[in-house]
Length: 171
Image (cartoon, rainbow, N blue to C red; front, side, top):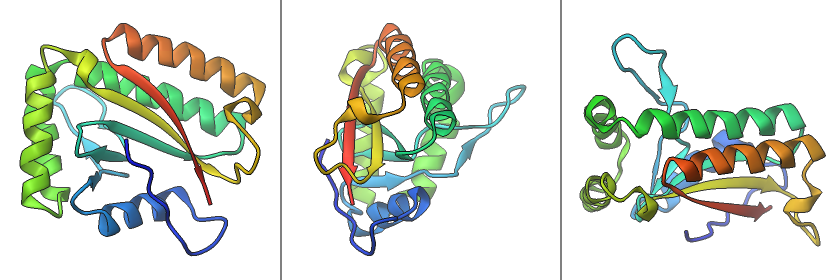
């Protein structure tokens, strides 16, 4: 997944970052932040914050409290479980992508990649991306309980057949 830099201050919020990436990189990412997928009989859920041209499902959170980070990992894994049911989620997910895509070419590419990957989930990447001040820091500088949650939920996502990547985004 391509790294995107967003200027405008050290403490860019997660929603501001996602929105700016969706606008500034309209041919590379679709912003789905705060957009919920509704499946009859189920609770609405957020599929991810950004979808990359490669079909990568990107979950973004500002580096910070363990509880917020752990929620991100659980939300991402739960989302992967829901998206693992293509018969139920394909229509609502494609509708959401179409509503949010700023580039028809990108929409076509993403939908083709996702359709092709339904039988081969290992081709789809799930990205845990952390915003923050990473000068000299690594993922090891996350709170201890967050690291445990990350390992557990990443394992769960891998068991569903996805590839997991962790990215740090310095601001």
